[in-house]
Length: 405
Ligand SMILES: Cc1cc2nc3c(=O)[nH]c(=O)nc-3n(C[C@H](O)[C@H](O)[C@H](O)COP(=O)(O)OP(=O)(O)OC[C@H]3O[C@@H](n4cnc5c(N)ncnc54)[C@H](O)[C@@H]3O)c2cc1C
Image 1 (spheres, protein in one colour):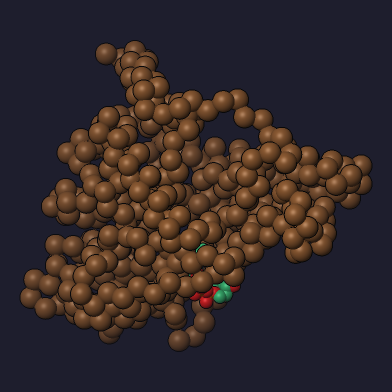
Image 2 (cartoon, helix red, strand yellow):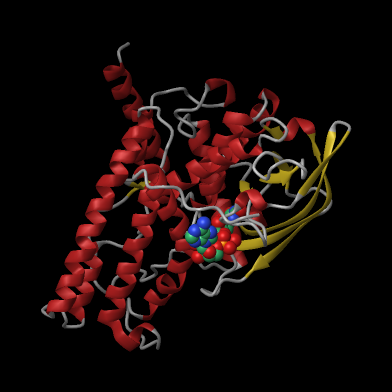
């Protein structure tokens, strides 16, 4: 069968599945003052809310996977359907018309950890984790950053020492999103301290519930605690759980980081916010004829449209089978710059209502966004680091001088 009829049959099957398992969304047009006014970029939840959301997300992911829509492009031997990416896109377009549980808890797990396991894990490890991750039974987190190594990731100090068929891990990671509910972690370690720093690193998959792993929550300035410090004290990892070759962890890390930038830059980005919301806000507070506000509104509109097109170009490249590259650094940088413009715009419109709860719908609620945006400028590579990448690899500018060591 050629792809045309196959795609039609697939979409009909998807429509049947969604129609019988989820409720169709009504035509939703934004009305000022109606519904939830939450606009945060780092979600704020109590542990109870988080547990309930994860349970619901896992329930839906299992139903979706068992019906054959959990990993549409994945290899069949690991539970996928090995269909082209336009089938997956078609499914997501259909699914967006239905109300289904949020899949945010799987963002890092499926967007970054699973593609790295597929690219660098041995067959037994792919078999052990890929299906259960895509079914939502297992969740993975990213254990890269350390107190002394963030942008300069190759400076990490967590040690892994070989002990027969196992490795023993000791050290500390920090800013680990979702560690509190993850089952496995992709951890970068130093195996050869005597080699140049990029060359002595090795990547592993670690069981987050193994003896010697301690997870401590870190509270953000937004109030929630979605990331953690994770301590490793002589934690044993089988050699089979090594991703890639010994001392070749840097290459493995690059696979994860490219996927991270693609996930952040190409993702929903501004989330629940739409331009309509800002136009309505200006109207509601009677500043829609203020020339400076109108100029800011136009600026945000143009920037959001342009980065939407840039993302589409980068996504088209990924769909054509090419690796997400420096374009994703542009997408990530554009996203955080747009967010800052939005913060400035809403601050100008709302004034003191942003910091003192006046009870107005959609006013004080924006504080969560304002406090969350700096985190977005850091996560997945800081603005400054992204600018270096764009300068050097996109514009071909001379390399930044390296500090003497
Ligand atoms: C919301 C959030 C979620 C995160 N989740 C995870 C996670 O799940 N797993 C994980 O491993 N990490 C995670 N991180 C950590 C994140 O990857 C690091 O914070 C980031 O890489 C920056 O590292 P750092 O905090 O050590 O800052 P540093 O690298 O110390 O940077 C400090 C400042 O120096 C600037 N700087 C550094 N190097 C250069 C340079 N060469 N040129 C110009 N300026 C430079 C930076 O831009 C920054 O302003 C998360 C962070 C945030 C905010």
